[in-house]
Length: 336
Image (tube, rainbow, N blue to C red; front, side):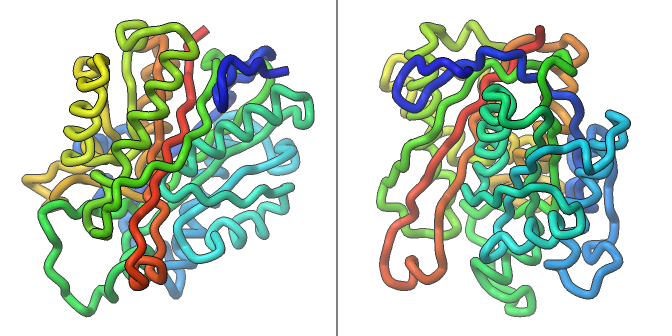
């Protein structure tokens, strides 16, 4: 059973390991600096479907299918799948799992959902409630723009602090002792709110939540930033990343050398006009599965903290004058 080491912080006891993983991205993501890392690049934003929402479901199905294929598994080998996305009521995930016919836990943590899914999937495997679990998330630029901002045909001007929602999906399969990358522990995030109300400045809204989870895990584990090869955030982008470093420095913690941000890595802001970088449930998931898990598997890194970040915004609440609450869930990944 997992061991509680602080409030909301745990380490796993059983060897819960990453058995397989896969990342599928859209054309713009495939043209970015990490393009060669992903398992598949889909040039058609509709993925052969009639709507963007249906396309997002296809992205999830493709990522899960590739991860299963790598491990020579079938869908019946997965006891429980934890899945989520940004579409209302997580219908992208519901429709993908409808086809997969797996026991399903639907999750919403905005862009932090992949870490939330990994934590729950790891704890289920660690407890013995499941032998093999999976976590998958997705996002799509066009579905997110339509839901959270403006219809694409509106042609609104993007602000300098805006981020580009990634069209992408990442899937991870966990089991007991079937792989060399271990989920060593985790930290369940707390809501942070700096009263940010600008839907185009999510990085600033999320940075305090990331700082809190990183500080809590380092303190509970009795470690320092130097004990990790990378401390990865999900999608703070360039503005949020700078704010995160400033917040931690004021608390006497310097992660400048270790910090990487998936949102800042996935696009070339000069060549691709993405302003502050990428965002979305598929951003951190695809970069984790395409870049950081291979680093661990190949021995290029041995300890990584992955702190996915989520802006829990709602168009309705923002219209009513509410601010954007944010959260960051952290997963400690270790190469055994």
